[in-house]
Image (tube, rainbow, N blue to C red; front, top):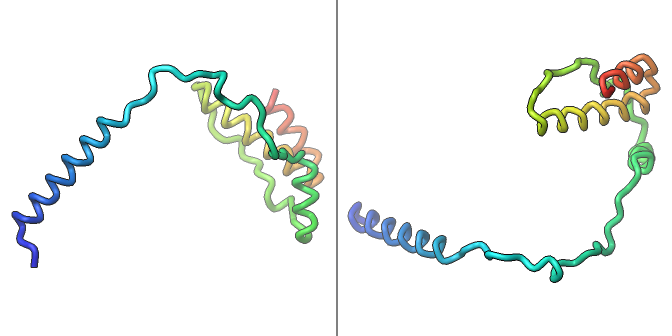
Amino acid sequence: MISFTRCFKLSVCVLCGLALCAGAAQAPQHIDIKKLSTTVEDVVVPLPNEIFGALNKLGGVNWKQHVRSDKGPNFTERPRIALLLGTVIADGFIAVQAEDAPTVKDIGQRVL
C-alpha cells in the first residue's frame, strides 16, 4: 500500500511538471493570415428544405407537436438576443412545416 507522504510527494511532482508544461506552451505573437487557407473544400451546407426533406424520408413527423408557442424571456445583451433570434427563426421553420398559419404569423411578428 502506498503511504500518504509518498502519494503527496508524487502529486506535488506531477503538479509541478504540469505547471512547467503549461508555461512552455505559449500562444504565437503573430499569425500570418496568408498561410491560412482561403477556401474550404468539400463542405456542403444543406438548405432548410433539404433538411426537412431528409427528415420526411425517415417517416411522418407530427410537426404540430413540436411547435412552441411561449415567447420566452427578453434579453438586453447582444449575444443572448442573437441566440434568441436564432431560436425564434427555428421555431418559424417548424411552424411552417406544421402548416400552422397563426403561429407562423405570430413568430413573424416576434422576429420584427
